[in-house]
Image (cartoon, rainbow, N blue to C red):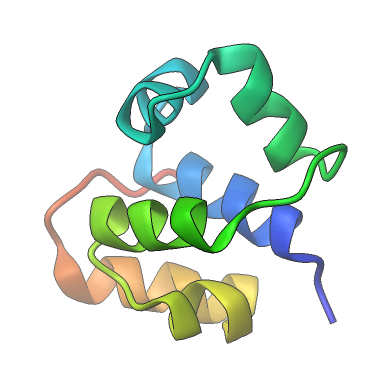
Length: 84
């Protein structure tokens, strides 16, 4: 199973958001977000909730979906650029 940090990184990349934008939306520095995305620090439930809101997904989607499933979920929304 893919690690959560990797899914979060892939999700950010396929939506085209830069790290500093996602960090801003979470209210943390880009460096702090980078550590979360690389798995050096743990994503909190609050972080997951904020990411779910940003990406218009459920926490369940972020936690449980594979990379392929995340791509499909974002494509169905068709509200952001897809970078595959």
